[in-house]
Figure 1: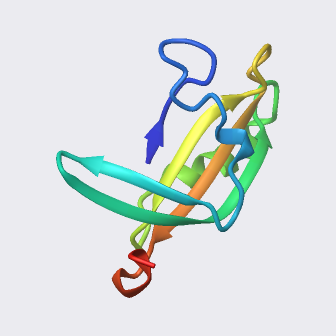
Figure 2 (figure 1 turned 90 degrees about the horizontal axis):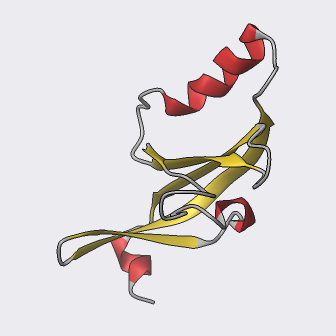
Length: 98
């Protein structure tokens, strides 16, 4: 799970809300590149929500049994009332170089 700001401190996830299923994400570790394909996106209400809604939203940051990356940021720009969730899974090697 990677969390980043969208409107301060580098704005690393400034446009995360625009990511769609089928988009490719590349994660770099030194010279190594890990490629993922987006399989799920969501914008969830967070601020002023009942505790059961907020706990349900928190399910996205729990450990999973499968290999994936989950990207999370606040949204929209001026109020941060929601969470943007993007889930991507590894692209199989035979498809990564096409």
